[in-house]
Image 1: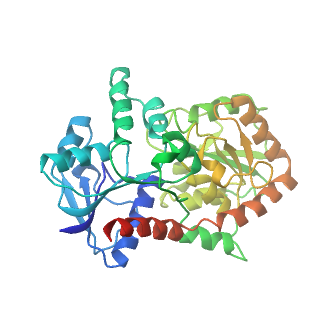
Image 2: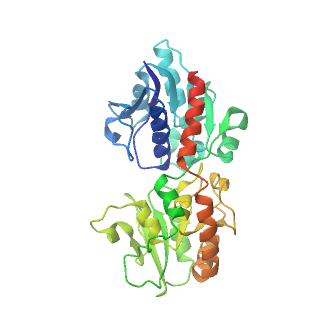
Image 3: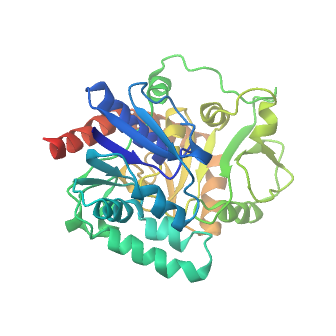
Length: 364
C-alpha cells in the first residue's frame, strides 16, 4: 500500500502541476511511498519527478466519463491528494465502489468554478453539471489547503484548514539574488529598446484577448519600444509588430526564464488566478510588471510599490499602465528593485514543505 496516491488528469507545464510535483518530491525525500497516476496522453512530467515515486499510466482522462473510470481503480493508499475540482468527488466515488476508506487532502489552487468553468471553453450544456461537481466536491470530507486568501474566500473560508502560498523555483530565487545579473537577452543589437512581453495563449481566462485589445488602444509602435509574446499552441493572431518568442529562439529551447529576461516590462492580464506565479517569476528576472487585480495576486502584488495593478478585463486601464511604464524609466527601476525583494520571499521549497507537513498530519 502507498502512503499517498496523487491522481492527475495529465502532466502539463502549468504552475499548478509543477507545484504538485514539488510537494510529491518533498514527501518522497522524507521517505514516503508515493504513486502518481496519470493518463497515457499526458504522462511526461514538466520538471524532474523524484525517481522513488511510482508513476502509473492509465488509459485517458480527456472526457468526464473517462475521468470517472480513471479514478475508479486507483491504487490503495493511506491518503489521496486531490488537485482539481473534479478529483475529490471522483476519488470519493472510487473509494465507495471498492468499499474502502481513506482521507483526502484537497489542494485548492484556484477558484475553478471561475477559472475552469465560467471562463472555460466547454459547451454551455455541460457547465451546470461541472458547477454541480465543483460544488459537491467541496462537500466531500477532506483536509483543504488553499493557495491564497482569494481562493479560500471563493470556496468558503470555513472549508479551508490552511492557506499556503506557492513559490518560485530555486533558479528564479538565484537569479533575483544575483549581484551581477546576466545581460538582458534581447535577441537583437538595439539595446536601447524597451521590451514589453506577455503570454499569448488560447482560452479566455489568461486574458490574451484583453492584451491584444489594449495594444490597439496604445499609440502606434515606435522605434524605441518592442513587443514580444511567449506564444503557446492555439494562440490567437497577434498584431504584425508583436514578435513571437518561439521564432526568436530559433533552435534554442523555448524557456520561460529566457523569455522573462528579454522583458523590461512583463504584462499579466489574466481574468482570474488562484495565485499567479508568472509575475513573481518575471520580478525575479528583473522585469517591471503590470498585473491585473485578478484574485490571488494580492498575496504579493502592491500597486505602485512592486507593480502596477489594473482591473481585470479593462483594456483601457491596461494600455494606460503599460504606456506609463514604457515611458517612465525611473518608475520601472523602482518597481524592478521592489519586485526583486518580493520574489525572494516566495521560495517553492517553503510551499512544498508546508503542504507536505499537512499531508503527514493526515497520515499520522
